[in-house]
Amino acid sequence: MQKQPPQKLVVLGATGTIGLNTLDVASRHPDRFLIHALSAQSRMSELAALCARHRPRYAVAGSAQAASQLKQLLADAAVNCEVLAGEEGLAQVVSDADTDQVVAGIVGAAGLLPVLAAVEAGKRVLLANKEPLVMAGAIVMPALKASKAELIPLDSEHNAIFQCLPGGYRCGATPRGITRIMLTASGGPFRDRPVETLSSVTPEEAIRHPNWEMGPKISVDSASMMNKGLEMIEAAWLFDLSPEQIRVVLHPQSIVHSMVEYVDGSVLAQMGQPDMRTPIAQALGWPERITSGVAPLDLETLGQLEFREVDAERYPCIRLAGEALKAGGVAPTVLNAANEIAVEAFLGKRIAYTRIPELIDKCLHAHQASEYMHSPSNELTAVLAVDNWARVFTESLICE
Ligand code: NAD
Ligand code: MG
Image (cartoon, rainbow, N blue to C red):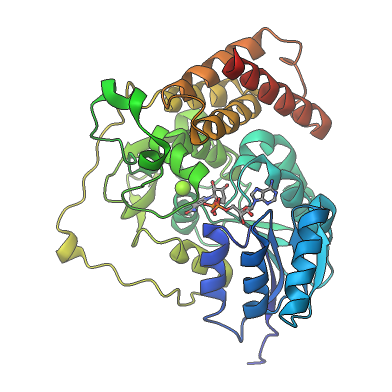
């Protein structure tokens, strides 16, 4: 068989958890993958160190100021790499003619424009960054269908479902023969803590996840289970499902990463260690299997796997996300934006943890009464305007 040339990878959010895990897996297969571009918003010394190690052709910094700092660091280390900046730099590297695969590891809505640009340029997009689909699935998914791009989910639950769907399945299509999917949720660090004490939890406690190591925003989302709420909306877009076809099951061990139920009563599950390098390797190598560095699963040592119903009182964010999913239109855009602002305020110690769902609820209600209620959800400018409105509104509630 003729040897394939290495795939050229663009890693967006290279200094984050997803970015670093991607570089770990890719560097185990130097014959298969070449790092073409790396990006980071801030912390330029970390980005410069990654450039020295992986020798990308391009590096994208968050701002012009960060770019000049990065240029200096790279010159001092004698690393030859073209430095770009901001949204334009991201758009350039994802749509570069040489780029084969784009790993979307930026956190939050900031990932929307680069993800959309990569899809429009027809690339294979490995999507960890769920917020763009939540806020603008009605834009991203039609763009996917209109291009030759492929979307492969990296989010562990969605990657699990992708693995359990019939061979040849491509995201965006309605899967054949399935009744519903079951997303598993660990319940986060507060699953056994008395509900009445939740108002006093600190950001440090919230980001200490029992099973996974992740960035601060998604860690808080995992504690509140807004992460699972966002994932319900993400799943509805990726797999073309109705809200009724999406269930959430509490599974404290994070070994079963999600399940697909078929019309004949079969339930297929994907299992593995809670380590993002498994879904990353599955997506990077797809349709082949490649090694990830993850230890094998030892079921005898694990002993038991548990599954429970989700406690609605403990996790009000699940209900809010479910309502936004059912309402459709720009309601998920509002939910996502309000959540991003509330989580940032909680991490900055400006609000109590329990105010996160309160603020999102208020913002969703205010939106129903606002001029933005009937904004088209399939127009980028309308979605960005709603996103901005919800951010300003939530911030105003925090400042009250
Ligand atoms: P992180 O905070 O560890 O890293 C975020 C990265 O994005 C950093 O490189 C940062 O420089 C960059 N970034 C931040 N703000 C930016 C901006 N405004 N513009 C451009 N770049 C910016 O986050 P993470 O945990 O790696 O998560 C990344 C995304 O992947 C999130 O959307 C998250 O929900 C999703 N995800 C993460 C995990 C995980 O295990 N960490 C699992 C599933 C999904
Ligand atoms: Mg997930």
